[in-house]
Amino acid sequence: MKSKIKKIFTNGRILLLIAVLFLSLIAIHPRIPALAHGVAIKSVIGDSAADLAGIKNPESRASPTSLEIIEKINNIPVNNLDDYYTVVSRFNVNQSFILTTNKGNYRITVMGEDEKPLGLNVKEVATSNIRKGLDLEGGTRVLLKPEEKVSVDDLDIVVENIKRRLNVYGLADVNVKTLKDLEGNSFVLVEISGAQDEELKELLAKQGKFEAKIGNETVFKGGNDITYVCRSADCSGITSQGCVETTNGYVCEFRFSISLTPEAAQRQAEATKDLEIFDGYLSQNLSLFLDDELVDELRISSGLKGKAETEISISGSGVGGTYEEAALNTLDNMKRLQTILITGSLPVKLEIINTETLSPLLGEDFLKNVLFIGVLALVSVIIVITLRYRKLIIALPIALTMVSEVIIILGVASMISWNLDLVAIAGIIIAVGTGVDDLIIITDETLNEKTEIYNNWKEKLKKAFFIIMAAYFTTLVAMLPLWFAGAGLLKGFALTTIIGISAGVLISRPAFGRMIEILVEE
Image (cartoon, rainbow, N blue to C red; front, side):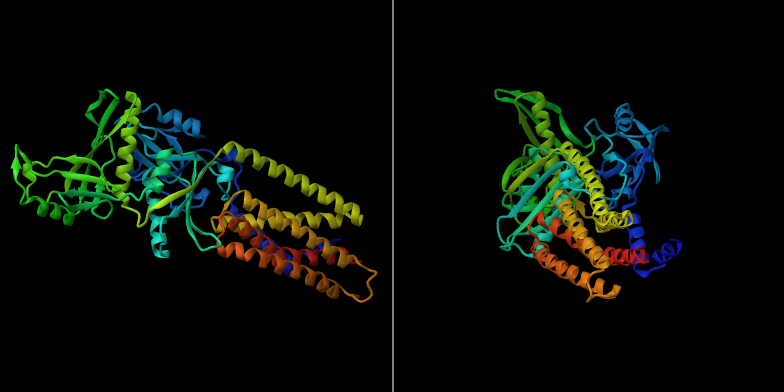
């Protein structure tokens, strides 16, 4: 038996499988949940308290285990989300504290009283680099379609602009990608962790064209003409007048400051130099248009006539049936306008084709069921194989090969930052299921002593692998159109299936064939 074990662990094919498994585990980077203390920083809102303190926003495709982890706040240990929110809720506006992470210490001053006063989006510390898709994590999926045909470059601009908008809006775990159907129509799929409101869907679909005009002349636009948009409590928010009660409810006004580029300021100076002055103001107002609709008009002080002023104030309003509704609507309008001023307009209008909100509770239950059924299937395969061949030594390599193929698929998915959702799990099941068929073919051919034509190991394995390769190429040809056509969510199914069957045919199943050959030798 010792000689057989030595042969197994010195065989090239088996050593290749072990090496690939080792690299896959490094990519997955599993952690023991009980040892995963703290909370991970998903994203940092621009110009927030955390941003001003120097905390860096994670890269969009950063691995889950590489995220910065909050360990202490004012030397108070933070073990989970409950600890974090309990400690943070104790601080008032303008109060400072020391936030300790695994990458350093930061002095943060609370800037506002909204839902995220620090400007941090946080989550539990990841236990691996496996990314769970929306079906398992929960959240909102929005499918958008351009109202007119667009080039590939314009579609890339749309994707980048949407990512910037959602980042400015304070959202994390955002996946934005382009899709095409079998007819060649282009779509943009946005997946956002956590259920979102109607304002978010409107933010995605709106072109976001912002223009400031004096008369018929545009003096600046959202995006490149804006160098800074204030979103902190000291220079933005509902005005000191508060909300006014009307016959139809309440009306509130917001105001925030922005900085223009010198070129935009000069255009404003040129547009005002010939205007007349009445009662301390210029004869024409600064009109603000959002998606070609007038949202506000600002009177221009006579002191700004012909002057290239880079610092100006933007205002707007919101309404509601109650004071609270009006205040929330006003803040939402301000936030949306600030976002569009920072990111600029989309090159094309988008139409919402479909929206879907998924509960994280359903994903957790499904994942538990998948793990339970997976273990049950593995045990069943071991029992059936043992009964079929009357040798447990045959069943164990089959079980180990099945587990190896799942680890390799998850490792590759972790390396390429691919999200695992329901269709991806279906692809894993297909890959492992076809793998079991191939392993049984290899076992049958290796143990078949009655066949006279195939009277040595190489000839028997050649016959087995001829059948396996034929089945492999058949499945591959069926999956490639789904991958290249980009047919919606089926792309994930095609990818995981291709990864699974390729890893099996090229790595795990040849190693299994050699392992069985060694184990059944007399």
